[in-house]
Length: 391
Image (tube, rainbow, N blue to C red):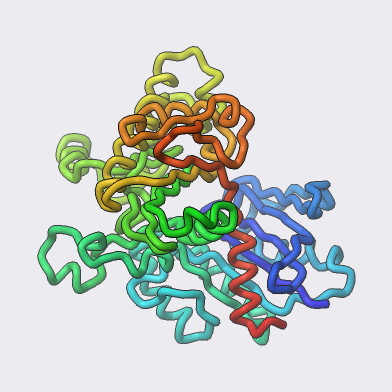
């Protein structure tokens, strides 16, 4: 029996999973290699979460290609003779060209490399792993699933910046991200509440990366992330929406260059920057520091404010779904966001919310509310299985 491997390469990590090939793939293995470029370490677990392999890895020269080789080395003995028939990748940016998953070839890989300036912190690592697998297993089908693809059909107005047309025509526009997560969660929402399948829906993907997406009839209408994955909501270490004049001020008054600005907006801001303590919501909730409380308050304020903006794009709001690490696990965040959206007619059932039930709105609430765990790896596995011919 063959298997589908799913790979998600980040700037300093490589997450992967192996599924039994089928229209509804079954998880077999899950692992991650963290600390790439610093102190790399690997962990592999079975479907129940039991640790099968744990390794500290050499620091010298350990890059994403080395992480890819390590992934294959530690996973292979656990497959018990089963073959990998295809590999599905999360690729952050598909640019203006790719609105659906694609079977990769040399021409497409080269095209995806031209989008590196649009996602400099993600795209190079996505491609490094693809190339490493191609070098060692050239006949193995590899499928790219794009974070931008789900938003590809948004109205032209929702994608546009008010800038000279030359730059818009060169690809400077709103793309949106977290699309694989939104596709999975919106599909699960339709399964769980088929009577609400066509309503005006906002999904709140709240984690270290955070964004919102307005959805109508299963299609993306508008999103908070734009040209890059730093726009919109305040995040763990990313600032979210920021007056461009602030960046000019930092250049003029503090001597910031391009790479310093990049570090500032991606790695030193957000919950970490405001609190001065941590990017982890659990740490901030447990802290008695005033700055931690203020960081949480700003996080909630930005979410509630952007929900209002997306409700305007939808012409109202019928349902709100929470997902992502914070959205799925932090009842306090869900409660506070709901309080900020009470004017829309949203009221939570306190007991259901505290328990993390699937449906958490109170009886009589004009807006339905759900908690639906995301599963990007499973969504990629399904797409890879289908595109590789259902092997």
